[in-house]
Image 1: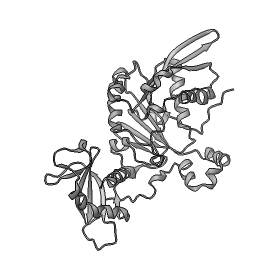
Image 2: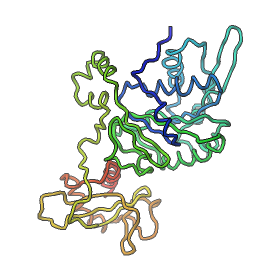
Image 3: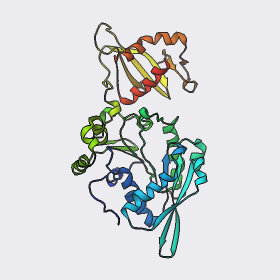
Image 4: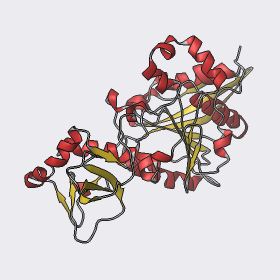
Length: 361
């Protein structure tokens, strides 16, 4: 017997009201973002219009029988009694593009519809763009934010790949093609927030952050749902760090990062270029002070008399130089300040870029 929907779990209707192309929801675990997306946002409308979706994953190895079966068995069949099952070719898993058909049975009648196409971001951009579907309804990517502590990594030029795919796929739909991302906020750092220019200091739990073509919702648990979960899982009661992440939706990986605005008496000392972004590093003019010695933030452009340090040939452009032995020695004071926690940052994204740069100094 199917479960009934309640008013305690996530409802995607409100974020849809902003009518943005990119819709990003991050929240604690157990809010039901994934289940409600598949059942109320994808499956229920699909029964009426049979318009297929694209489901994005990051790695080809994520495409498994278990992934597809979990969508049907633990989500769709949990909330309805429809006689449905998936049909797909296991041999196409390795290719990073898999068509999943929905088989619907009514008595002896069997109907088969293309339900969604799984596309891996790790395959060549050209193949991603060719994965377009006619009359596409939407795009969904689950668990977008990774936890780097488990060894996960974002794709090279990930946000660019997503934009290029969107530009191609949107030609095959009427109106605004909407892309939905759901995530647990291990960190507020991710390629999309960087690309969108999100001011992470302005992200607030329970609120919407609205941009030109995107909206971000930092969802929170309904108090009644939170109470139920506290009784059900002892980890939430006795592991405070896990509680902050899983129930409160706190970005636990970011909690010790020193965030601020540009302090007074700091001047631009040098510039890095990393993954297409300029990062200005400002130094305290009064070195005898006991405050942070450096402050880092993204800057829009490079001054005419300044050269930026780069660590990858892809970042080499005019007035940019690959960091060599002599340049590394000039950067040792900054590296030492990083080790002693004497550096503050304008936002979360700058911090994580600087961490990667630090590894190369």
